[in-house]
Image 1: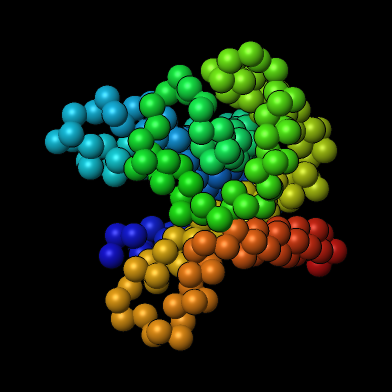
Image 2: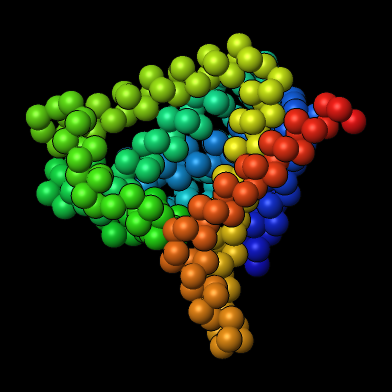
Length: 252
């Protein structure tokens, strides 16, 4: 029940950001701050924090920590909404690049001696049920990219990825703040589409686990869960639709 409510809430947030992000700019920054806070909390839990929480309190921590951090960042983003545009854009870019890199590292670099401990559960949580997205780039291509990353050891390469993503995120944040209106419409559409993509994957995952799901729908739902191209095209189509709607609104 709680998962369904969260999907509905995030679905509404995604729609508002994707299609009305600029019209509701200050509120959009608050929603983006909440989403990023939730994602950051999950990211920190997966990589660093959860293993340090006593087992008896882990369920409570996993439930409340993302909500609390999300609310704090939402309030901060609402209060400093103009400056929040830079930080939201920067962190969203950094988070996306680092997460993609980690997904491929987990898949293709089996000998990677990460400076962090990744359990099977944490890896499953990191992928958000989108393991199939790792097939969008071949293992050979990813190995080539990894060879370009500076650093002699695995830990150095991971640090380099984090720093490169941070630099790219800062550049994106500065550009968006300079361009203003069209950039705001684009970044809110992208963040909204990303939220809706997560809602789609979460919904497909719930349906796939539903025992009463009609048998003829099982293959379709399975494709939604496992085929990375499905969620990718949905994400791309939502971005295109959101940007079009928001840019067209200027003429209305």
